[in-house]
Length: 103
Image 1: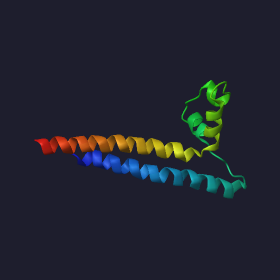
Image 2 (image 1 turned 90 degrees about the vertical axis):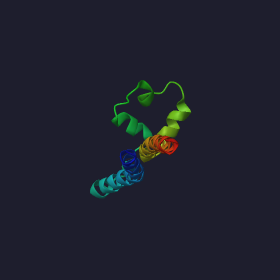
Image 3 (image 1 turned 180 degrees about the vertical axis):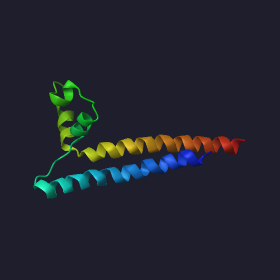
Image 4 (image 1 turned 180 degrees about the horizontal axis):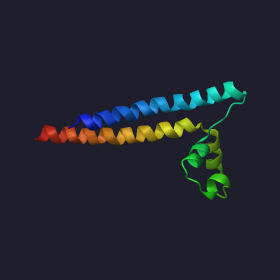
């Protein structure tokens, strides 16, 4: 039974590694085509996944946080999301293993 969560954990960890490589690869490919580096920030990722709020477009508060999100590369957010899911899965697998050992 632990094979399915273990496989999901491996997929999440692989995604955490491959996501930034894919984003950087897309940026590099785009640069080779038109000669302009397309920066992708966390704000861009939030906008693309339809997390559109007024704060992303025109912040009225937490302006420093908005600037930091504008500076950070978008692949960081993708990797953190994959790592968060991997952490939750690892805790789930650990709980399953402890439950099996207790039987």
